[in-house]
Image 1 (cartoon, rainbow, N blue to C red):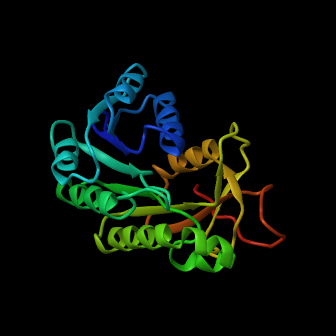
Image 2: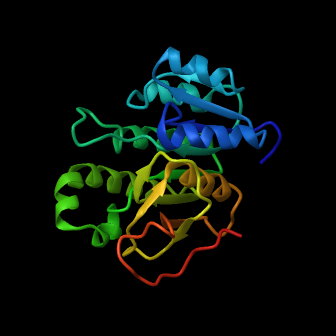
Image 3: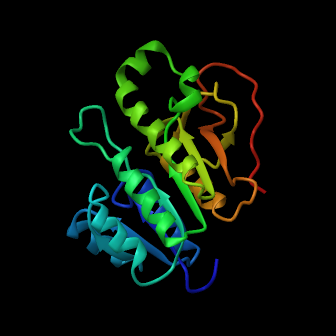
Length: 225
């Protein structure tokens, strides 16, 4: 990354996205965030993040945020929704971000998806799949659109998310059968470490806490360095 380029973060309002924003600023990196409400914008701006108010579901908002002004080196997206939400951003919002990133010539796109998307569907119980199936279909479509875009990508699929402080035990694996929980702060650490990792380029990785696996299973951890 050059000193003039920015990291563009979609989903910084809450959850994993907010944790990522904090870690990026702690490393003194330049961050531009797309948020939907002015109240959140004020909070983020106080931490030194440049904020654009807009909706990922609106392509004009997305292109205005990514294509204008400062060059964007990497786009990170944590946007998504719950099965109970109306119009979720999991696919259409991420599609807009990916398409704008292609136009802007960004170097890398990091997509936060979910265990259960794509080939990791094998990790889920029938009960969980029944509850989350509609969301996972949308997440899989976003993953496939990113892969087809020819952007350099890293797709990270966290397991069940918790809000406790980071444990430092978050790990990545290419094994699609792994399922477990992980704290949002640990996902954020893994995402930020993936930024400058050549090994993570064009990889799809599941993220879990090594001490929160659902059931015993041997697996190979993926190293970013």
